[in-house]
Image (cartoon, helix red, strand yellow):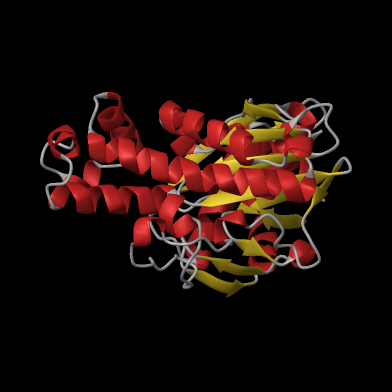
Length: 316
């Protein structure tokens, strides 16, 4: 049975036709947001969806699941806040159903990805698992008792917005959600890049300045990883700081939820194995011993396709 999976990130729109019985991606499309407004994104999704359906020989659109990088009000289809897209209180489910001409279910993108990993990826066979994701932001998808857990209002798993003390006595940074003190404002990919660019511009990291070739806009987590591997003290210090923040977050999730498995995903962790190792070491050192004893921490198996597969599984 083919279903349409839609993954709306802060930078890209991805769609795939997924054979939900086996979790296989039949065909997919990817497009960078030319305009991140809800109207433009839903129009692009409808266009790409029609292309996929036509390519598969389907006479009509199929039911779709949509994962959005934002806070979604359960199955109502309302996106309360998607900071990296600039959305607030957007009735995206209604808009998408009208544009696609098919039933649509909207969820947080990491909830969708967690479902994909639980059904066909790194959390197979596990009743209680957490997908811990570090990409542009920080978030989690929760599988509890063998089922996707979205919370009373659909916003469970927003670990990027738990409050943390500013490291090293630094001034607080404002998160994309508008609040101060969020984990994401220090440890998300956007925040990491901003801090690294500031350091390169101020001359605190000669390695980053050299690696970016004089163009600070090129600096991202991957370049910080390279600077760290090359022995740059500032980059190593940043990774130790970010690894501690992320590791503590995972340790706290372990104490609260007692998962059997934590699946580590996201572009930042994929590009930065040294940071991932620091995260794991910190989490295992700080977790409640009873919760950590049998806890497994493993990389994502589905990678970028987790959100697409999971979204398709959510389709009505």
